[in-house]
Amino acid sequence: MDKKKGTKNLAKMNRREFVKKSAVTAGSVIAASNLPGFIGPARAATRDHILIGRPNPSTGPLADFGAGTPWADDIAVNEINKAGGIFIKELGKKLPIKIKTVDTQSNPTKAAEVASQLILKDKVDLMLFYHTPDTVNPVSSICERFKVPAISLDSPLEPWLEGGPYKWAFHAFWSVEKDIVPVYTGIWDQVETNKKVGILMANDPDGVAWSKVFKEVGAQKGYELFDKGRFPYGLQDFSPFINDWKENNVEILLANLIPPDFITAWRQCQRLGFKPKVATVGKAVLFPSVCEALGGDLAKGISTEVWWSPHHPFKSSLSGVSAQQFCDRWTQETSKIWTQPLGFKYAGYEVAYDALTRAASLDKDAIREAIAQTDIDTIVGKIKFNDQNYARTPLVGGQWNKGEKFPWEIKITFNDQFPNIPKTGEVFSM
Image (cartoon, rainbow, N blue to C red):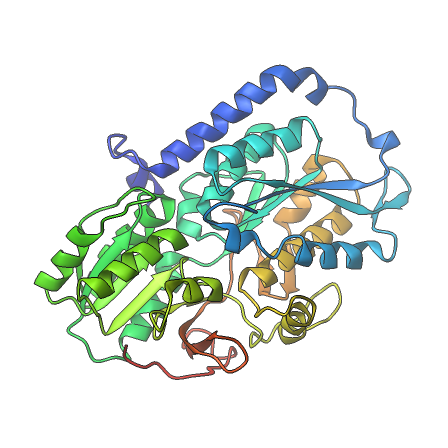
């Protein structure tokens, strides 16, 4: 994607600009009252642990993403610390990992504020964070501002790259253009339709990036896209979109929304008589809890991306447990079905442990350089950062249906790009 082209017209203000500006503002305000402590003498001589900052959307519309914390975090930290932690050469001893988790409330401005506090007040050695551009973009900006090593996962690459270039922040996930588009259109191609696609995406970094890519690449693949533009979070009336789709005989719905907005929109689709043959929805329906919240059978047949599952053939570099074993442990201990962010939460600690072990230092430049050299097989697949500080992770597609063990279960129905991740079901028309 052409980053310069994407940022050329300042008049087209979107949430990416807001996120970056709010990140800088929050950092500046907090820095003004904490800067003397920030630039004071190093505490290495008295350190008895390595501190990792963990901004997490524990509440708010992205809470389903954050729900696996602290469960996955605690497992990873315990595995790292069971042998004493990580050897730090300048101290001549091992230090255990400690984490400080702070709720971002699913808010970009709050995410920037808590990241600044973790850096300036808590003096974290490393930042580890996840879950959509609302968290990842502002925290990345703050880490760049204060030159703190940062590892992020679980947010599409294109919105993240718009905030670059990066030196201190490193990111692992999939690309909208190179991964999402082939998966989504691969699902659509398995259902006989007129190839007319209605777009429903919010005015956030995801919505702006996704809609742009799909209108460019989707048209090249023979799909006709109908897009009435971005909308703010919390919209209550989606009838203008729905009526436009009905008038144009749209048979495919393409959406990327936060869960509350999709629930509102999808219920209105049913009420107004819009029933597409295919509904492929990013972000909102990644979780079985959202399928249940829709009510009745409204989730049946909805397709989405699958970035991680118990069927992914990958193992932990920390303990050797498989994705299946990790999911089984979650279910045994929580009585809940697995969710996709669990594996990525854990994988972040695999990357952090690997980099800190190779750095063997609390020096931030040494840690940053070690992260840059990452080449590791994790529970979500190989992570090897390129010269733009990102790594792509595998992506397949799936579809929701009534479950056997749980009310709703997702089946992997498209795996052309990664056949080593097995299909567990076949695509069906809604």
